[in-house]
Image (tube, rainbow, N blue to C red; front, top):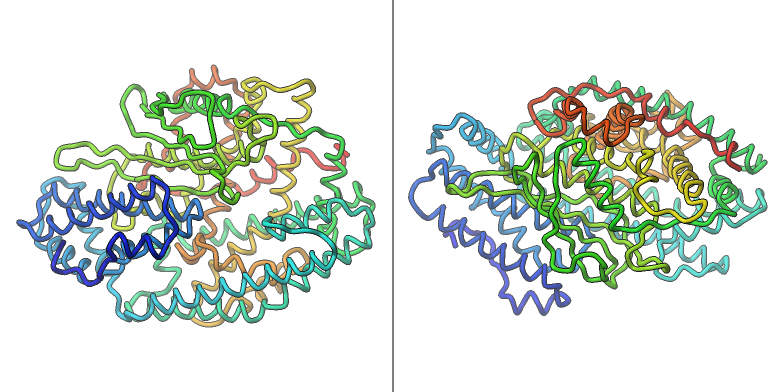
Length: 610
């Protein structure tokens, strides 16, 4: 291990005493991290760097980045805590960073692309120098404080539900509350319940907003200490879109969202006849009225995988070969592994970790793979991507999943394909910067649209009347997305605005936006504060607009495929050119047409299906 190491690592026995026994995969990860750190130390303690050893260092960091991003994606808090000393060793070790920087400055790479990577790596390490060593620790402490407050909010919500005689168990209170609203036939009672719910959530909102504002102020102080222009400016250094373009996309989306939400409100009134409270207070009941007599379909996992593999083959020329030992007939402990080739050339592998594994059910996750294909001392390193979605076993069989599960599976599969097909393989220390932030969600959101393509129904086995049930699932999924239009736009705007400002807090940005657009009628301030404690908001402050960008871009692209059969798509390889920005960092980020979202999701209304 390099002599520059500043952090001490616990012995394996000490780590085991502090954390629950890990799964075999985490033990392998720990052994891999130890091996990579030993190799990194040997490289830095050895002769001067060469082009090959530079690529090796970057490959090590990409592998390290994958380990922690994967554990974060599957909400594995216990094993994240177990491996936290290794994260500190690689990413919070000023001595190690300086050792790498010193050796990079003494290197000149003959290959122009690797030399460009070296220069960017130097720039990144210089910018990551900690001018205030306590700053990151203060930010972590504030995040811990904010999480404690969000826990209190959830407890207040549980207490409210228990007072109403509604058992919560281990479920999320919000899920239980929405189910309660959906089953309450009296409109006045629904409005009263909604007011009580908002009251329970508001009890800690001022305190939580204060902590979020202190986090924002801490970020501002850190970039100022580093001599950088601002938090947003730092985030957008990796963007191909400029701030004015991003602002235009958000404003255009917000204007369309307000109009589309007005239409949704009218549909809710027509379905429920409700006039009390806010129309969106009655959304769950409206959905229940549309779906109350419908049987909820489930789908065979193997058929869904074969379908999305076929889509990938027709669009991108990909082929998939199963390499796991279990084969069809999955059990709750399976990890499905496939090797992937593009037009016959191996491009990497995907590991599907899909089942509950006797753990709590969590939301679908955005998992990241090893992003960059690099030459490591003459050995080609192929990327590995994980797809992790926690599915509960269906009563009708362990291999059957819900429509929402299919949607999540296709979304995560899109991230995996993105990792495997990125063209420019420049490696960075964090392993994240393989695409500009605004384009990180484009391909994943495009893949999820395939649950709406006519070929999906023809590719899975549906029971009698299954086509009508599938159409209803599509309608309700679109309605759920329509309900979040304004909330998505508001959070994207606040994230952008508060991080480009040098003073003021989240409520100040919200007040300015409300004065201009009247957003408080649809999204109260209390609803959005907690989002600013989520990992996606912490990773790239100011860049949450990527979800609006990806949604619009994916809808716009999918329209080119909506009316084509898979055979027709396979015979039109020129369609691949649409995806250049998904795979090549250097391609421009042309702003998507925000209206495509409202066209795609607003085609059918609730009232026509009640």
